[in-house]
Image 1 (cartoon, rainbow, N blue to C red):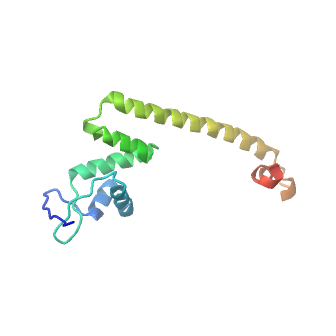
Image 2: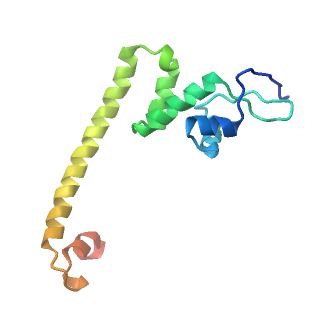
Image 3: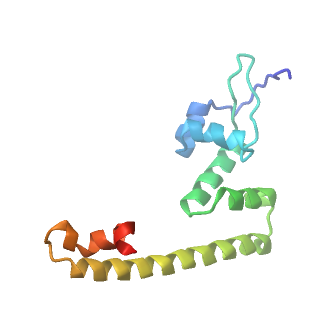
Length: 143
């Protein structure tokens, strides 16, 4: 497969793209490898050249990851056409499922907080064999 060359007025190197979007270079390469980002054109010297589209897509992916969306959820959002083309209804369906997942995790965390709070309150500070925290963490002791 022959590489093609490109001259883009808005062209950035991967390092510049990394700085602009606050995404690690290896993460950018990973997103390209798994198809989250399009493989960019290259210069005659073989350097990747990125533009506004890739910058916007990468910023979109980073922000979605910050909000806890999975790569599959982000992929689904991007398949809808990205931030300019997706309908609100299509995006809402994905976001609603994500919100349900977050609420389930919050519920689990609240249960965990109550259990750990009660266990810590029972802790007297004595030797390990009598420690309630060790007791719930040690699989063999829990049985």
